[in-house]
Length: 68
Image (cartoon, rainbow, N blue to C red; front, top):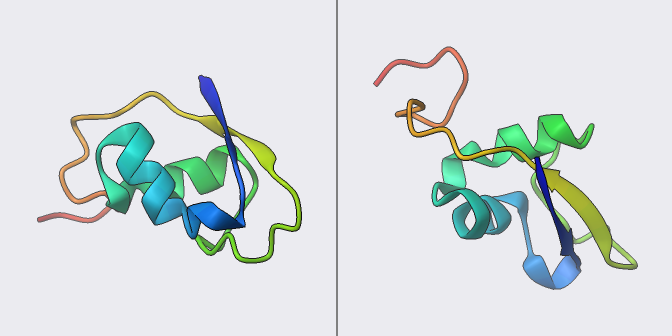
């Protein structure tokens, strides 16, 4: 697992997932890896380091247990 430092300026886990995993809909994977449930990062008052899971090209919908 890689890590990345984010701040409120990164706006949301959607943006982080798009930049780090190439798929904004996989934001929930970053949330799970970091014990988060909300993609909004506006609550951050200081930068934090998040664990970033490996990209998963087999996820076609970005959502667990969803079919396209």
